[in-house]
Length: 552
Image 1 (cartoon, rainbow, N blue to C red):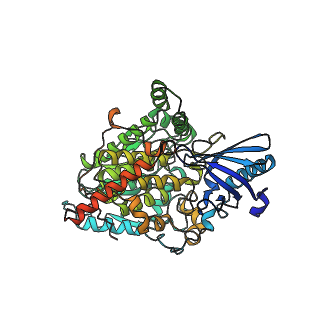
Image 2: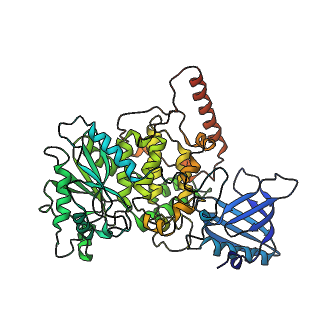
Image 3: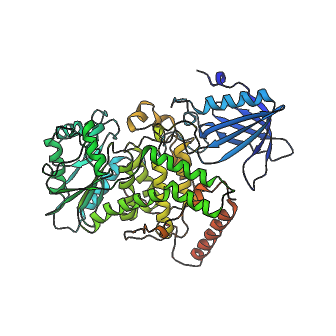
């Protein structure tokens, strides 16, 4: 199929309204295979206005007289209005945008055509392979002050080299050395989607580990798997003398019980000695998507009273989801830090709330994860390589008129929780709000290939790593770093324990209200902070912008 077949009208005269405090743009509107362009007249600025069509979440059109209006609601939460000359041109452009913005083919998306100056294909894709993190674990276990030698406790397994064990795992995973690949294969058959327990994070100060998996397939018959039991037994045996473990199940006890009726289930206490199950239910799927939609409906209503606003903010329950996510992550982190316990996190599939908890727990405990390079590695390892289905979850944002199928803002919830951490600990994160906003935007629509597809297997089939540019190569350009880094950053070797009390959590205005409130004041303030930090650095103060990249 050619893009030209979907473009009914190539261009028209139009006026673009971009929101409050922003002047309208008038010029020639053009539709291409991937973009909507508006070229102002010669009397105006020569810069083109571009919109990636993939970022359109919903489109509304209306006509009156000999003109028409198209309202575009975007996945990055912008609302744009196009006033177009000509009824036929309006309808044709609207149909073209609808068709081009909803193409499902990955290999025809813009990242496969994007060729920016200064970047080379293949750059940055190699920055965060599993082997890199395994080498870090090996180095930390060698230098561990604990009395138990752990230098051979873990190994890098390539049993999933062809994705036959688990289609949503990467080719290589870190597992206990005492468990061979045949046992991993049997454990994979006992876990939903093949997601057998793998190491997510090694907490060197206490010699404990954080693992993730999917639910066991015990079913109504309460089936067991000797190899799966052996795997978790090996985790405790290789951790430390007398170590115990906690299984943090992100479903309610009732939901876990009901899962047995459809073949799922939980780890039986008798089959997994030393492990205790804790239920900490986290919403995902449709309830979370509906919460996001209701929040944006409230944020988009400028006429409501204060009482109405507070009622709607409470009614959407978004901040409740933030609270529960942070609370569960703190529970997992406390188990490792305070109890010296090993932690296994899973829900049902293990690709959503599981990754939310494991990644937040690492930010709380691990100083390297709070650096710019370490945070990028965390997202690559715990979200992208770990099989979060970005293509499904981010198919629509908050404005789509279609009934949610697989959409859910799990990654957005993670970014919001990270923003809360940054607000409560303003010196402890090397990256700032600009980094979080960039990740939100690119996860829904991006010229880079990093968030394409639902798993590493799909990315391999589509040749994403060889035919598209990595987002990290773009964000790590010097001209971008000033917008993304925190000028007040001071390395903090301690754990950061967030408060989840109602008065401690805030609405992330920089995201949810960024298009309805003028952004200039915050940008000016950010530049002022940078200037102050730079001046202090020049005067001989302690550097506050030092990058701390994880060592291979």
